[in-house]
Length: 38
Length: 595
Image (cartoon, rainbow over all chains, first blue to last red; front, side):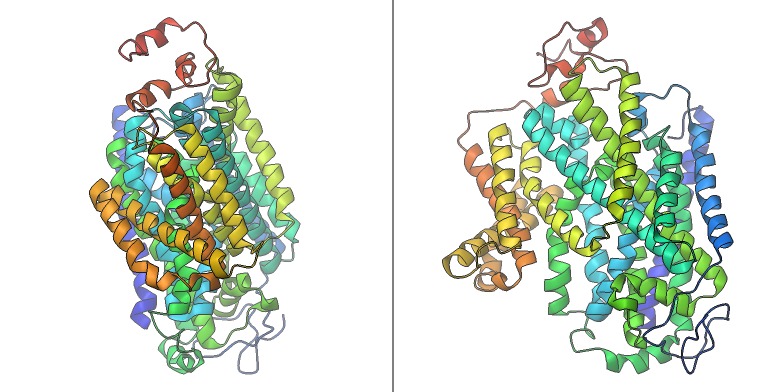
C-alpha cells in the first residue's frame, strides 16, 4: 500500500524534471535564435 | 483553535502528528492569518502579473493572442497542457472518489482524465494537418460545414469554459473561507481579478507563460504533500489499522462499483471532454506540429500521477476514519491538509490549489476570447473583413465579461462532480460528427446538426428520466448505448491504428458488450445516457451521410482557415461567407487553391 501511495509523487517529480529540462531548452533556443518564447 | 481530538494536540500551529491519530468528525480547518493569506495571494498573482509583463507588447497580434506563434516548444507546451488540465476539481473529485470507492477510486478518476489528453492527440494532428492556421475547432467546422455546425461547437465550448471558470472561482472562495478568516466572496473576487489581470493584455501567450510557473508550484507541492500527509497520518500503521474500515469493494483495485459509478462514465467522456474543450484545441494549434505527440504524452503522465496521487488523500482519509466536514466531500483535502500538515506546508497547499485553479481559469479566459474573436466576430460578424485591432478588443472585453459572469455564477455553488459528468456527456453528442467531418467527405452540415440535436435530446431524456426507463424503451436506449460503447472504443482505436482497426474494435466491442448492457444499463442512468449520446449521434450522422452525394475536398480547409492578422480576405472563401473583393496578398495565397 505504501508503494501504491508513494509511486505517484515519484512520477510527478520525474515529470517535473523532464518538463523542466524542456522549458530550459525552449528558453535557450528562443534566446539563441532571437525569437519569442511564446 | 479547538482541539483536534482526545489523543491529539490542537491542530493549529503544532508540529505534524507522527503517530496514528484519527481526527474527530467535527475537526475544524487550520486557519491561516488574514495577512498571511493576503501576502500569499499577492505574491502569487503579483508574480504571475510581472511574468506576463515580460512578454506584453503594445500592439499585440490577434493570432498570437489566440494561439501564440504556432511553434511553441515541448517544455512550455507540456507544462501548459498539464497546468490547464489540472484544476481545483481534479483534487477534490479524485479524493472524493478515493473516499467513496477506496483504493481504486483515484484511478477511476485520474486515469480517465489523463487519457482524455492522450486520445485526442492523433485527432489533433489531423486537425493541425488540415488547417495549420486554425484558432478554434469550431472554426474548422465552419470551413467544413458552415455556420450551424460551427455555432453548436462554439456554444458547447463556451458553456464548458464558463462552467469551468465558475467552478474554479468557487473553489478559490471555498478555500479562502476554509483556511482563513476571510469570506467566500473575498476569495472569489481575488481569484477572478488576479487571473484577469495577468491574462487580459496578452491572452493565450500570457496563459502559457504563467502556466510554467504555476505547474512548477503545483507539481512540486503535490510531490511534497502526498508523502507528508501519508506519513503524518500514521503511514503503514494507519493503513494496517484502517484496512478494516474498507468494505470489500473499497479494498480491491478491481471494484465493479467504482468502475460502473465512477470510472465508466468518465471513460465514456474521454473523447468528449477533449473534443469539447477549446483549451486543448488551442494548445494543439499552438505547439510546434512535430511536438504534438511528446507534449500530449507528457501531459498525460504528469496529470495522471498528480491527480491520482492527490486522490490518495481521500483513501487515507477513509482509512483514518475522517468524516468530511458538513458531509461535503469537497472538504476532504483541506481537512487532511489541516490535520496532517504544519503551517508552512498548509501555505504550500494553499498555493497549490490557487495555482491549479488559476492556470485553468486563465486558459478558460483565453479559450473564451478565442471563440468570441474567431467564431463570433471573425467568421460571423466581420465575415472576412475582420479588423485585428477590433478583434483584440473583442477578446479582451470577452475576458472581462466572462470573469464577471464567473464571479456571479460562483455564488450558486453547484456540485462540481455532477457538472463534469453532465457536460462531458453533452459533449459526447459532438464527438462522432466532429471526427467524421474531418475524415469522411460525405458528412453534410445537415447530418452534423441533426445528429447533435437528436442525441442531446435523447441524452436529456435518458439522463433525467423524463419517462420511466423500462420495457421496450429501456431496451432501445440500451441498444443505442451498446452502439455508443462500440463507437467510443472504435474511435479510440481509429485514432491510433486507422479505419480498419477502428471499425473492427468498435464492432467487436459492441457485440461483446451487448450481453452485459442489455437489461442492465437501465439501472445506471449516468452511464446509459452518456453512451446514448455517442450511439444516437453516430447513428443519425451515419444515416444522413451515407447516401449523401457530397465529396468534400479536405484541402479546402487549409485555404479557408487562415490567420486574421495580415490576411483580411481569407475567410471570405468559407461557406456562407459574404463575397467581397479579395486583397492582393490573399489572392496570392489562394492562387493554387482552385476556389
